[in-house]
Length: 190
Image: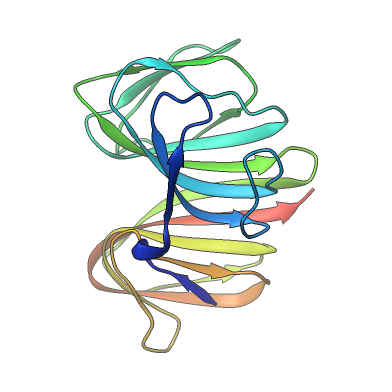
């Protein structure tokens, strides 16, 4: 397990230059936007406009804070996302436009290189301990809010802290110290 603390996150400009993103984790470590296998980041979206295009990349977007956003991905109907919505998957190389519903939002963006990896994102609300298998090649648990003890030890995740497991695990135990919400993100080779 590798703990990823909020202070370690790296802020960088969006690919299209219209904002900034906070990179939480990337593989391989220190990979650039052109050559990552997978990437997890957050962004503050403050205006309507186009999303950056990522050729050969699959994306999943989740609203973390704010009222929500309406996305129009080429070839699909418009989709409205709020903090209560399930994560929304779409191809990162399709033209995508976004409109804020009622002010700025913060989103979680998970990306994987198509043909190499696939990913899955779940939003879990925890009020009691949860133990579940982590069969993926890599699993990232990201605490959105609250405080979560991970595993059987003393490791705790506060808001925006993460724990990365880079090998399958028979089971991971998440124990909320107080009511919490986490994102469970899995990456597997194709």
